[in-house]
Length: 127
Image (cartoon, rainbow, N blue to C red; front, side):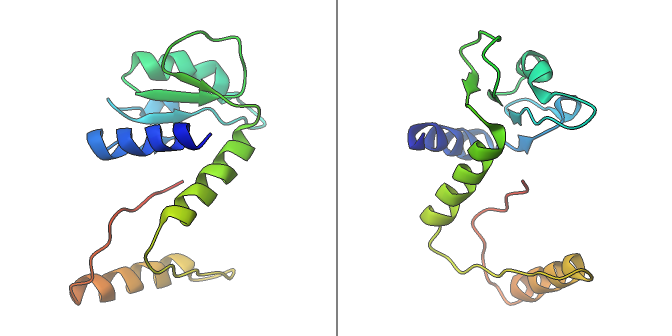
């Protein structure tokens, strides 16, 4: 599995790819993850994402055949393992913010304080 994670990170670095969960928002070189919700099954949109230019589509159904589709037993498990991989490889500081009110405001304030004081960040992932 780590080889797949490295492959995803290499694509992200090479093409400045974004991880996208909604196939309608796919741009060239993005990485699509087919989540299931109560209303839709993201697996059904993997080929559409590839046709729109996604480098990879990650799904948990084996009915699709394409060289750029990555299969996993469970999307949720894949995401958890991928995040653990990212956190394990990350050598910087991590700031965790929890609570029911004000998380976005605090996050934005911390970003601006650090940015205005010449702190550099390597990458910002939105999952």
